[in-house]
Amino acid sequence: MHQNGECMFFLVLLAASVSLDTFGVGMAYAMAGVKIPWNTRFLISGIIFALTAAAVFAGRSLGNWIPAFWFRLAGAGILLCIGIRTLWNALGENRTKDYDKDESSCIEPAECVMLSLTLALDSMCAGLGISDTSLLAYLFPVFAAAVNLVFLSLGTVACCNLRKVNGLAGCVLVILALFRFVCG
Image 1 (cartoon, rainbow, N blue to C red):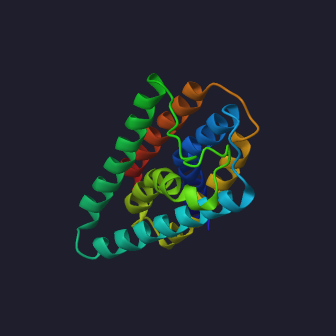
Image 2: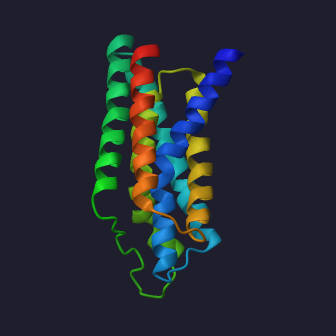
């Protein structure tokens, strides 16, 4: 039971780390006066859930053919790459692509598909990277979708330094990658 608790904590921390971009997106759109209604937020979270679940299932299938050591090494490498990229982005400019194609100052459900795909990439990579950890990895898509929904919603009302937030997320991801490599 203790090991399951540690795994759950790891999954929640990982979901939060890969979802901080979503917080930034919500904040950037709020500052630009673009609204993201609840139905769009739920659709974004649903797409993130589906894509992340597909990545976990794909990772489980790949695990049948790849030796455990190499799969763990690849998973740690994926998390490390996401962490380094997040740290790199924290040093650069924070730009948000304009998904409000009809310029209505509102991201409608029809406009959110590409935004969802963009936001899901880190969760998908992380899901693939941790898919061999335990059966609890199947909960990661739920955590990723829920945390994305919360962060997107919080981002629409919060204002903070995105560089610090991205820097923190990058550091956490690098630590999780090292933990994954050393501890399995």
